[in-house]
Image 1 (cartoon, rainbow, N blue to C red):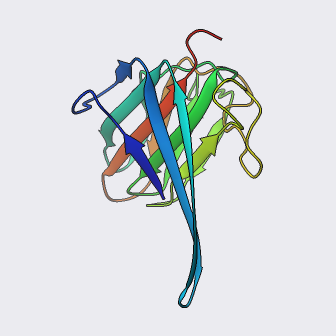
Image 2 (cartoon, one colour):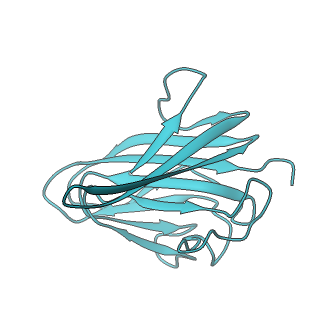
Image 3 (cartoon, one colour):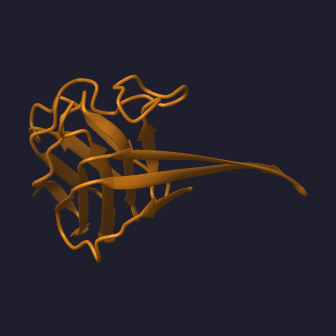
Length: 154
């Protein structure tokens, strides 16, 4: 589970915020055993998106951009199975298949590095993102949430 800290109000649509922190909280548990862990990622740029992708929609444009080498943290969650394609719906640079209510989480080893943290792969490794295209093949509308941190002054 990823908790996100925001000090600048409610996010609607796409928003870019300066100096933000994401707190990734991961807990391993089995029965009564529990081992919590927390990592904070901070940088000077945050990009967020909150929106809906209607049922049976193909290649809905989402005006979301990010430099893959400057991205420090990423959290994407959809309430239905959803496919995201970057830069083009017909010839995507990256394709991400999201499962309903299963977040995609990415972070780097520290606030200034583009090196992925152990166990995390950059979903945009194929290239920078100039736009997203969302396909929802399910019978229900998807609520899509994106939270990203980007180093604006690498």
